[in-house]
Length: 296
Ligand code: GLU
Picture 1 (spheres, helix red, strand yellow):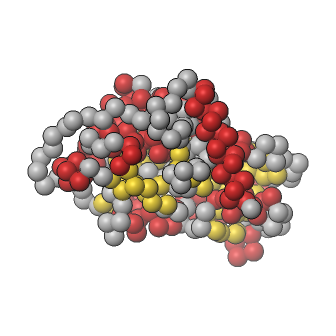
Picture 2: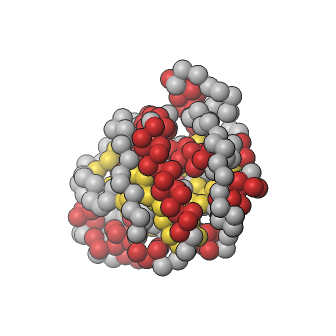
């Protein structure tokens, strides 16, 4: 079954990464070291004070995206987004083991924050004005870009313009910016655009020939390419910018400020770069330096 194959590949990748990182501090070998936990004090009544008091944070993230959030054999997700969440938790005085992860496919990210089912969403989550009507974003902490992935032996797709003739099918996920952005290139949306809840299903559809391409952010596609050696490749160039933010409940400005401060701190102290290198860095060796945060 596909899931077990993904899990096996993930386990192998995790093992390789633990070895590459020259040491595992017993955190379950999830691609990163557990950060040192701070002993902060927060103003009463803030989200930070509540989370610190509860000694627990609920994080919405992806479970199917290698390099950013991929569920491992221990049931927990691993990846760059997970490492960012751990660094935020550590600044709140919460150890990594006390993080509860909730799988948040693209289309439910605003909803889980509005309903208070999670405290933050770190899930390859592009900052945009439509989403800001319902939630707020700290960050960006990374800037990805939309790209197209095809089967390795297919040279017929060279960019989004290749969909304009109307004969190619492309897959993306519900509630994602790539699913929106690609529509302007489609001659017949109903025929050409296939949407699932998670990207892994698009990868299966591409493998099986039901679609001709998958479109989403470059770093997500690079993870699938690396995980399925020789099967897939990128086609053409990146054609959007996707600044990734950390979703928080709308109006929680103090919490947003705190996360922005934390991002600036981890850019400086090297833990941000180390988080990349232990995770998505396996597929993309352009270690980011951390984009300026937008304190809107
Ligand atoms: N970054 C894009 C978005 O937030 C695509 C990746 C995703 O679906 O998580 O919609």
